[in-house]
Length: 226
Image (cartoon, rainbow, N blue to C red; front, side, top):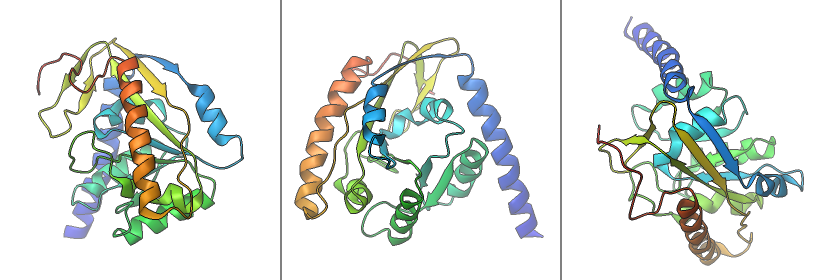
């Protein structure tokens, strides 16, 4: 009985979560720049790895819904609820970590990439520090020689949750600016040093992208804490 109740709870959470994402984002206007970089990344016929800060998930989840991209979801107890929501929005999911210690998550991402699915990873998640890119998040891109596309989001009006990442919730009727950066790669045989070097490169790209959409590190868009 408890198992049935849990399954019912997950199913209901999926439906409600899908509706909540839609109600929060359906009235916003998206403006995108840098899509040519995504096309460049895919030009070799391989999928790409999208990197995004944890705080920018909500508008991007809505914008890219139905694309079939595979998202890494933490093994935290709440992860199954997130998995159900993402599934209803048209994403694949892998549970675990992208780092070498998260073998299950890494294997799942590799399988998805080999099946031609784009990947989406939050390199500062699941618990921060905020906007600190963990080189281990680049491991699957290195193993599969995949292009890495950083993505930044800015909102003309948004609320910020009081969480470690200052999670962004767009206000109704706002304008959302989305910027895609030039592809980066990690040389397959370069080991940890290669990942660290690429992480530094991506940090610089993220800073430029965030500045371009009004999301400078020191000055996030104004909005009340929730």
